[in-house]
Length: 426
Ligand code: HEM
Image (tube, rainbow, N blue to C red; front, side):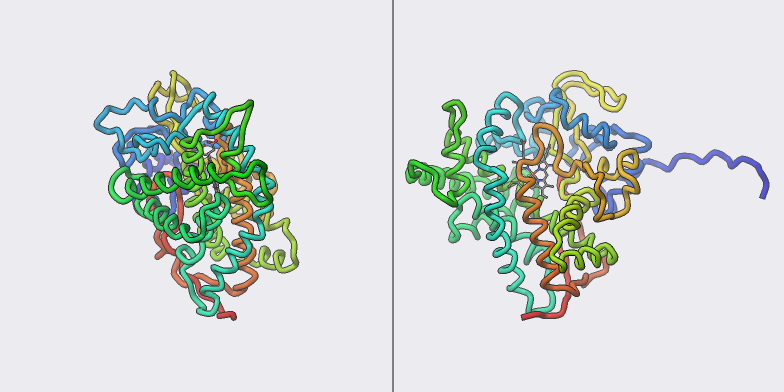
């Protein structure tokens, strides 16, 4: 060996984004962006140009920056490209005037009203129901010895849970499952089945809210459903209008559905491909402990969370993120999945460590739009994982991980199917 210096190595070329390989494992591309182009302008598959923010510090700052509006009216795309982003607010529908599409002061007022109805206490009281739903779904395949955990478990659990919480009657819940399934399968695209499903959901919710308002007793009753709570909620004499209540019910369904499907799907997949971590969690759960389950679900959210990119933001004035100038009207996408693997913030970010404590991940966002449903998501995620590991202790993947297909959507990250095997149980 000589002491001669190495010739300088050229930086690796910029990775291709939004390809099939990228959908399968976006993390190497995000690592490259974080290092070489932390605030990166790119053309999305829809043709729209947007900034991707990938470093943790920049991401956290951008999420809290009120100069970045959530109102799609601030988007300066030429008219011909409008409607291509899949931003729900681009469609002219009153259901879309919801929390994720509005700014203060409207956002402040609506969020305060919904927070009065959607309380952590209401979620905690719902725990036995989530457990019952989880068990009922596992009962359906436990004797078979095999299942697709996305279709038979991760998909139905959140939709039935949120329908129950809202107060959608049982006999109507399968309609909701089908409408929501249409939205997942075909993304946020404005045309065809998705638009029809949104329309049906809007009509149904408007009627349900109207009926519940007519039948509302004078005082809250134990176990009152969330829609009745929303109708009842008031602040300085202000109530939600029927339309606002419908938009709120819709965003609770929409924001609480695919996210939770993916928390369960990505979470189980990560456990099945990290046997040592899975063994520790399984033993801890068997001892009746909750600690590792709590830190574990947070770590699964950081390591491979359901929301890959936060929802759209638009610059309302010239601003700078991570040294990069952003012009008014420019769309900004905060890449939560990249920020949550930033080595500047997390020790050994690519390692799954269920005991990780210093874990202020951005999986639920940050700032005024921080996930309203985080307590419910935690309850569902913890119940689902603990129950599966307890009832099907030798659960294992029934496919080569390389063969599994990931959904290629822009905002969410999740598996299409998750085939598993286990010893059948009665
Ligand atoms: C907002 C993630 C489950 C309701 C958000 C945001 C994220 C997020 C990242 C912020 C988006 C942004 O700033 O652009 C998640 C994850 C979940 C989950 C990872 C599951 C693991 C739920 C559930 C519900 C819910 C179960 C309700 C039932 C909402 C609502 C907002 C929101 C209403 C908008 C809040 C606002 O704008 O003030 N969520 N979510 N989420 N989430 Fe969740």
